[in-house]
Length: 453
Image 1: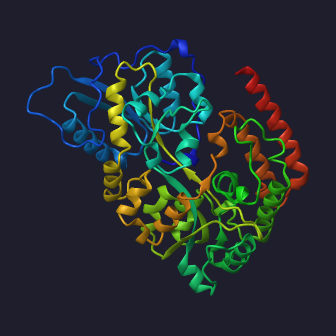
Image 2 (image 1 turned 60 degrees about the horizontal axis):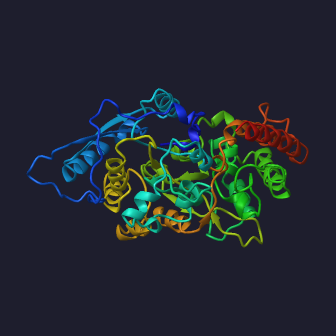
Image 3 (image 1 turned 120 degrees about the horizontal axis):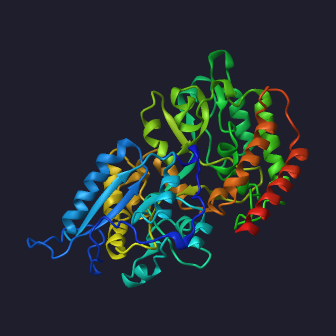
């Protein structure tokens, strides 16, 4: 599930248009107290009533057999619940989801991600009643990431995490060895990164020091560098960008990225179709790249030795943020089968499923640090860095703070292109001149959208 490939927030919903979901299924809630972990509590007697819940997910085809196995295990442990699964491609998933809700036919449960202000619309069910009833421990998940992603402004939880994914810097050890460059250390600086990138760049061999600055997502909104510089893209609630997009820290980071682009150490757009672990890095042509946990399997299959390290910091910075994300499970607020849905949500977010995800070709990173440690993932050279990063403090990415980012993010991206990666490769613009104007335009649009809401 590649969230950066097209971050799509849910379209506007009129809560009054929502009616009961899954009307074609048998209705009725299950009794509370079912085995949340999916342990086998099935009996030989046939249940008097079977509740069927509709479940939508947007993972790729490679995960479907895994989901089928999980559902079979859950149904064996819960003979009074059946799960009807639908896989819908990520492109257009939220549009189809919202259309189904508007027509009164939304699923009982689905997977995805939202900015936290989406919870205010009322179609996603708050889970506090179930959490309190079952004495369900939310602290077992990676925190503060889970609270940042799944708690609304009212303090209620609106979902359970399926996974944890975060970001590191991947580096190609073979290229470092070939060109005699020392491996990066955990306390390296942006100057160290720049120096290594220059030494790793050999255009005549099709090799470039990095592709980290290929896009604004890779360079800024998809990693913690700006946070560790003492800056940010927006306020914590996502409602203010003026004073952030045009801050001294942001201008400095844009200038840094522009320098690497001008020097030719950042892979040019002519060789970049996809940045990060899915792009030229996996082909062995990039020295250092943005690496996500969901790309771990691709990097492990690479023909070169790969390493992982924390993000470089600005010289003198004592800030230590990490970038952590989650895909989560949500419940329809109008569902007539909430008890059954809650049981399935708990199961898919349980340690047992997390362990299976590891054992099944590392489908995803479990959302509980205890599972990582129990499975000994810190022994893996790459995974241990992800685990270290996941335990650090973090912030919500800009697109997870307020849904208005979906309307203004393009302005930020265009500014990044104009400053760092101009189309003609030479008409670089001054960030000190561009960013204040862009911040004003973005803020005006955000204010307009907030007034409409």
